[in-house]
Picture 1 (cartoon, protein in one colour):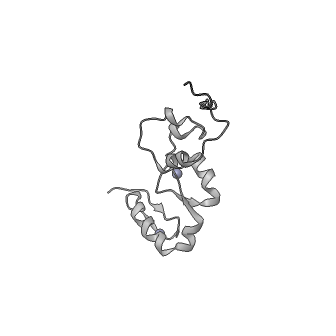
Picture 2 (cartoon, rainbow, N blue to C red):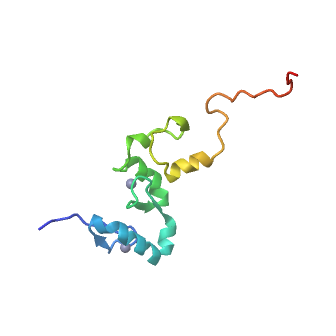
Picture 3 (cartoon, protein in one colour):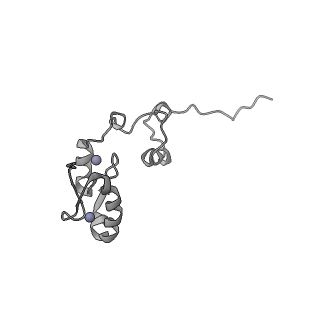
Length: 116
Ligand SMILES: [Zn+2]
Ligand SMILES: [Zn+2]
């Protein structure tokens, strides 16, 4: 008989289930506990990791699903990203205005003196 380790529901410690069912359970349990869900956040590395917002940073630093690619600070050049589908995080970065200190300033085209 398989002895699968049971995961504990972050919304209610009385809920225990095998990891294979956790994601489904989280979706439904979240709706039943909206007050708790407000204080919880999803780990960006694993949708099954639901931790208190206060401890999210701490968790993500130690998350077992953390990948080396996401390791660096978010100051990577967008052009040199791996050819992976952009996740929500990347989209956020794309929507942000470019920081002035990032990279060289774009050379401004001069339109003042048009040769005629
Ligand atoms: Zn639950
Ligand atoms: Zn995690």
